[in-house]
Amino acid sequence: MSLKINNLHACLEDGTEILKGTTLEVPTGEVHAIMGPNGSGKSTLSKVIAGHEDYQVTSGSVTLDDEDILEMGIDERSRAGIFLAFQYPAEVPGVSNANFIRAALQARMPEGEELDAVAYYKDLYAKMDLLEMDRKFTARAVNEGFSGGEKKRNEILQMMMLDPKYCIMDETDSGLDIDALKIVARGVNAMRSPDRGMLLITHYQRLLDYIKPDYVHVMSAGKIVKSGGPELALELEKHGYDFLKEAALA
Image (cartoon, rainbow, N blue to C red; front, side):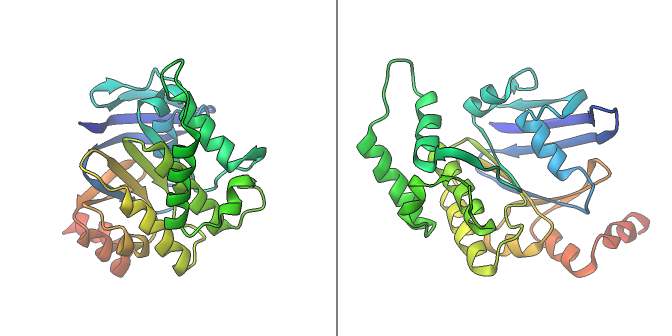
C-alpha cells in the first residue's frame, strides 16, 4: 500500500511547467522528507496531489493504494485518505474549531450515522492536551487571530482528528520557534503508524531532528534528483545544494 507519483508533469494555468517528471513512492509505515531550494516544485507537488485547481497535470500519474486519484475532486481525495497541512493555513471566520472538525468527521460517516458528541470531545481534548492547546480554542474561529505557531498546531490537531492514511506536510516548521516545533513534532510522531505514510516538505534539517525520516529526497527543477537516508539531510545542511553539483561531477 503506497502513494505513488510516477513521471508527473504539471503546469500553471499560463502553461508554465513546474513539475517536470517527478517520481516518488511513499509506502505506508514510512516517513519521507523532501528538501530542495526555493522554486524547485516541492509545494507544487503537495498541492497537485491534493487537487489544487491552480495546477494542471499534463502527464504522469498519482495513485493511492493503486487507485488513480487525478480524476478525483478535492473532497474525494480527502475521503480516500489524503491530508495536506498547509504552509500558510487559511482562516475560516465564523466557524469554530470544534464545529469545523466535527463537520469534517461527520461528513466521513456512513449516511444515517451520527457522531457521538461525548466521544468526540473526549478525543478532541486529549489531542489538544498533547499539543498543549488551551481548550478555549475549540470556541474560536478556525485560525482567526492565531499566531503562526497556533495555526500550525491547529493544522496538526485537524490531521490527528481526521486520522488520514497519507499525511503531506508542507513546511510545517515554517515560522515556528523551537518550543512550538517540539510540540508540533510530538503530535506528528504520535501519528506514526505501520498503516500510515507521511511526506514532509521542508527547507531545514532542524525539523528532521525531531521527526526522523526513513528517507530523504532532494527536489530540483521539478523532479527528484537524489534520494538517500537521513544522513542526506545532514550533508545538505553542511554543504548546501552545491553538494548536488559536486556529486554530479564526481
